[in-house]
Length: 458
Image (tube, rainbow, N blue to C red; front, side):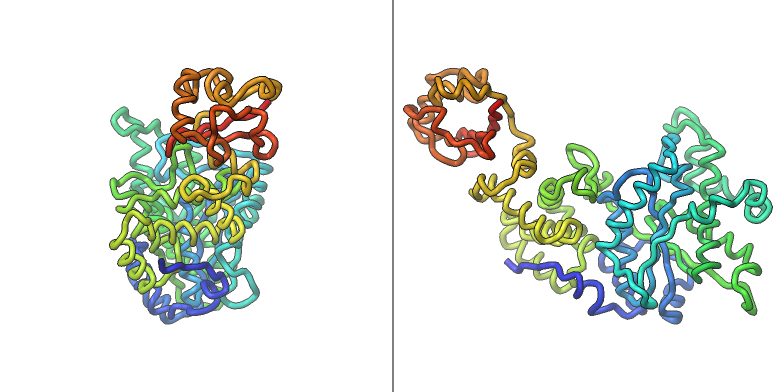
């Protein structure tokens, strides 16, 4: 297999794409959706420009759905431009109506600040933060909105956009009717004002940092273009000493969906987070490893920095032996290493091999062991009972028939060599007390080739 390993130094500081090729790079990766006229020329003729994307801090971590927009910033930086991540501490208190059918719960400032710190730490795994002209920045819009009074905002900003303009946005139109067929419950003035606040974000960043580009997912087009329109209408106030009103630009990427059109980023247990305490590295790795063949060609283009030639070579190798899941393994390796680090990836790989490749159970720590066997039947067994029974009784009576409904069935399968305890073949004469528990507490029982059970001694 052509093994691809992650090198952050190579990915972020070498082999930079020329600015002229940024749009082409996004196109072949399937990441490009739309842009304002003149955006490609602006990128080519004014390098380095500053471009930003906003991130919602109403959760303590970013998730897989955010990865595609993070990668837009990565490619912007690799193209020789300056990426900026705006953490919406102020707008996060309100909520974006885009893609929503109901008002969201509002968080207080303390919770938002805590979430912001976690998000910035995650972004630092993808972007290079330094003092160079292309060094990434993180800003928080609470810093410029906290002292902006309501009347002042209406006088300075609100007067520049009509209600008709704001109501014409798709994200608002879908919510404002509130009829039964739309699945919406209307929209509050608070959420209606969101696009005006986000538009002013662009104005502020244009003024303070010379930021001329806003990017985001395709469902953000309405909010982004509100910002460019606000800059146009407030143009005379923007660039000190400018001879003519400056212009801002917009670029959106594709929403990542599965081959069947459903939204990508959910597992059977819910959202896949970038925070290892919310989604463990093993679960994270398994999520990508289990990607469908129909989805993985797109995912590996969006979520990794592998070149076109490298991806096509992997695809050719995958086509010769799809059962080896070569594309999925490369994707899972690249993304897990980037998000959680090489050590966590190696641990996730070892844990995966426990089930599918005969790896050593004793090599797993407790958290990983429980992750690996999270989906199998689990039974608590009193530790004191072990001294008085053999393994036949352990796997039948002591487990309430979960593994074997009778001693006879347990004996018969053991005699045929079809039962293992902690990877060791069990025999009918073996005493339960002779089985050494993993981590002093767990016994993994295997019945046949695919049926696993986790016994916890209590």
